[in-house]
Image (cartoon, rainbow, N blue to C red):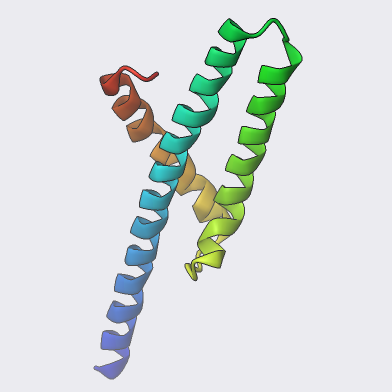
Length: 105
């Protein structure tokens, strides 16, 4: 009986970790889209330089990749890397729908 309770508690804590990572990735993707994608378009309109907006977007993508990889571990959320990637891909769908509804996409 004790083993069954421990397994249920472990499974419950694991789902909480997945939900935390989902919410974290949701926030990160919205910030990336607003700051870097919109910023790139603004820079292309205002500046004649072609390299600077591409560099700005590359820095944003690098920060996005590092945050997806490292941030959950820094916050103490331990899940396998493949699960992080799967959650990230699943998170993209509601983020794009949310940004499209707001008119930011």
